[in-house]
Length: 293
Ligand SMILES: [Zn+2]
Image (cartoon, rainbow, N blue to C red; front, top):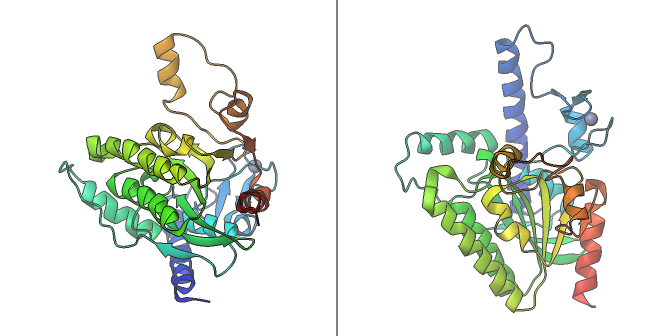
């Protein structure tokens, strides 16, 4: 096990401790609620109670109805790349508060402590069934996976790193969109990340975008939609503006299942819906196919 995997492991252990701590403190807070939040959670789709420890081993898929729960970036990397092959890149960025937004610094600090991440995006080198690639993952537990200056910079750098290494890139998106607290600076990331995609594409390299629940706002409107191949997880919410805003704007009722991956597949926005349990195999196949040797 290399040092970085060790660092990951210690982050995971730390995180589990935090979850346990949170579940204990929540238990005290909500004494009249049957189960403490954290250890057991209710499936939003079938309302069955699921043990989150078991869910961890089942790649966060509900065993009752097959619903795909949200996942943390580190867990996603763990189930996607070959064990011990991940080398994290792009460390050491510091999130600033360019618009002097009240409470933003504290918020970032709180999320850093809660998630053991520096920001809402991780990337690095990894292998999937032996196929080398650059892999980037957004973490929706960090401020809704919103894209501020650091996330935008890291996404762009991950494309630049893939160009430097002449490698395909896979990005798992999960985001609430551009980060409001950074205003115009976060909107600028949409153009910057898109330019990164273009430069990578100009080198004839492959970009696979995997849309996971939820991918919305400025992330959908930039690099998430620009993949050579766009995959999505079942039932994921993918869209730009929320359905209520659209209904009010166009003054029409929206169709059933609007903005879900199945609807987008039917409309040609997504190439294929892949179950989480088949994702690693599918990605490996695509990488191998494009490697050509
Ligand atoms: Zn369920």
